[in-house]
Length: 332
Figure 1 (cartoon, rainbow, N blue to C red):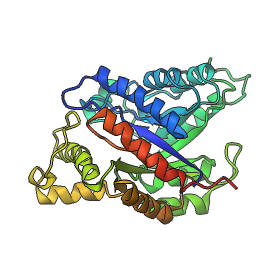
Figure 2 (cartoon, rainbow, N blue to C red):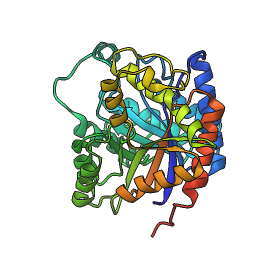
Figure 3 (cartoon, rainbow, N blue to C red):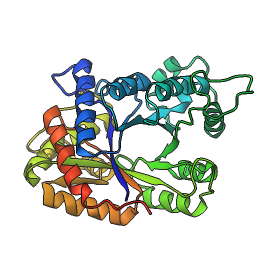
């Protein structure tokens, strides 16, 4: 593993506003930069009261402007919601303002509900055009000065494009196009091992990448003690339980007894979905992160953690960075 990074959903905690959430994202990115994280990615979600990163490119620009060395990008942009040219112009602009620091991860899901999806798009295509849209987008970032339609800014910026996925489809597409691949194991780990195996076995070298580059996403909840870390994680588990039962809201305050709040059957679902994660004080965290890394052998790990208190969230990522520095090896 060569790098470790942060995935931020810009969570809106109970008792806080979207302005507070975006401010906390900037503070986390700045702390991440100081702590040695390689990238800071924001994700596109819509109509979610607990997530403030809906206008993802705008949030990325704000974070990039408040930091100086960390890579900043989308993990990801949900491509079905946008015309590829619009995405190319947005990220071409970001790459022009912040050279060699912008990443573009692309997802195939809408990142929202059906009603909101219709509100985002004027026409609803029935067929899945994701592969063609990715190829079109890659073209806009290339050096094709003769093209009839160009992204300005965008042409010649060569923004690194990643495929994000939680199924085997993304793994196959990333391998076919020779692109880096990030797996959403932080909330959908079921197909993780098979997807990584398919991606690595069928990868075709390309102008973008000579050998496969796989990133796995993991939940991370670190504190000074195991008990404190488990307590902090209860916010994320409660949020996920509420989402699963059709009651999305702001990021809940942590609770001492999560079992008392969530019925057993739903709790099993939540624990399964969030199982690719590490929780604990420094020693426990190291053992858990090492287990995840040994299992998947990633080129990079990207950590995420919905912690209600922004200062404790920053501290969690600081503790994790100290642990991960001991697990990183230099690229061959």
